Length: 109
Length: 114
Image (cartoon, rainbow over all chains, first blue to last red; front, side):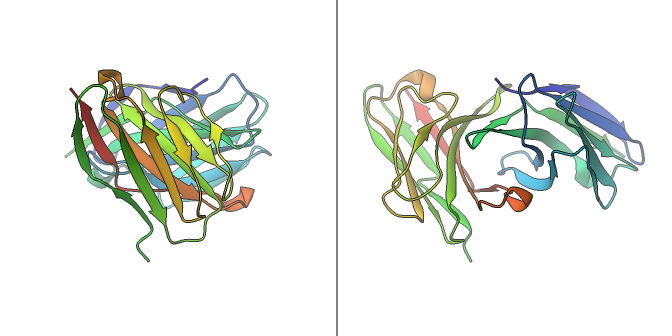
């Protein structure tokens, strides 16, 4: 039931780019992306709705391919503050919400 | 605004004991959720509510009960705690607009069942 995220973990140097993928086998209304720092609660980054839209937020952007039930999160010119675990959350009919298993991102100087 | 608050922050139970986790939000949100987070498993939905007086089962509801008697509160109960319920529990709330239904999370409750 949970969406599948890849990769499970990634280590970057400051300034490098990364892509995190989220894939679901079920039809989706929307995809959310969240970031969680160690010992803290998840924090919302962005929502993507059906229609294949893309969104941007500073140097973090995302896309949603409705036909493939896939979403990707793009982090460009990564900063130390980007470190954390990234979760995609998928909303399905009936207000059911399922999070992926997470991608651990570590940015090193 | 306090946002979403959870009590308690930490709790240790013995197998078979019961307890209730309280979640409160002051954003007038209709939707509320309870998740558990285990290492390598991400966040898994236990129960959720789409309005006062309503509840529904999520992905892993067994061993838990919930109640939403007031719009601002969502209670999660464990009737007979088991070691498998050792986890971090997060509550979240959101509005109803599909365009803007980001979830706001509480700080979490770390529960250990011995």
